[in-house]
Amino acid sequence: MFSSPELTIAYIKRQPESAGRVLSKMRPTDAAVFLQAIPTRFAVQAVANMNPRPASLVIAKMGVTSGGALLRDLDSAEASTILRQVDRTEREELLKELPRRLRRNIEMSLTFPTGTVGAHMTTAIAVLRETDKTSDALGLVKQAGRDFADLVFVVDDNRKLVGVIPAPSLLRHGTHTALSELVDTTCAAVSPHARLEAIAGMDAWHDYSCLPVVTRRGEVIGMISRKALRRAGQSKIADTDAVSPSMAESMVEALVASVVGLVDLWTSSARNSEGQGGQNGR
Image (cartoon, rainbow, N blue to C red; front, side, top):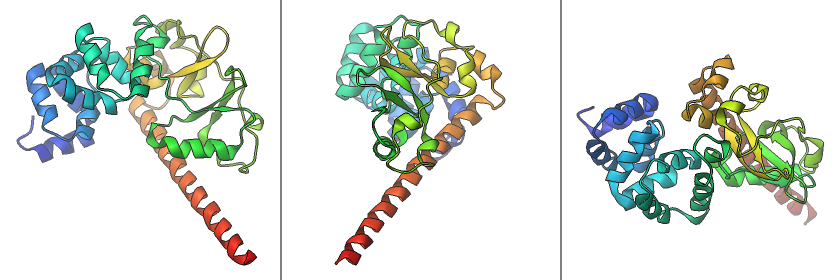
């Protein structure tokens, strides 16, 4: 592909989707050797853009330790899609290499049939109660960092979904505002048993990049994203968007980064204010 690791890494950084397509066409053994020779963070960018079937063959060739290290840094929904293609025995060995929370998340998604929402959802979501305050939500956003999605899910005492709050709206209100005052109760929720093609054309995708996944009793157990649908081959929602998929994802990533950065700024300002207040008191 390139004559030096530096050029290869630069190419992955600039064009991860193209790098994923190139790797998908390589012999699994050659692709595995290549991925093991570069830093994991760049290997993850490329594998995340591969077709799940060749990606599974490559990870199998990498071995349990190297393959597990790569899966650890993938989005859980992407890792689930790839592991679904791996031989059951090898899959069990790879799962043992993963942190407990990620392993539980993936194992849960693997219990659902391939074409359903549950098979492609992630359970790594930001969940708070409607009695919590914006300060609680902002703290959770900061703690989650880049793993955070662009929505906070609000539930009642029985973990039943009340609604969602877009992350940016948290910054427009006082820190002691109850989440019940901000929550959008009109956001559509989907069942983990629903077929992907059945939800791909929902109007809700015009407003949100991910939707809550709930049980028959209304308990929120995860979320399904636009990206997961596209990766699974359901492109209806991409066709209805005025913004291209890659640009939309970049906008979401930029939004999340901005929110996390603003939370850091808000936290620092609050800490400084408290410090000044303490000095004035003395």
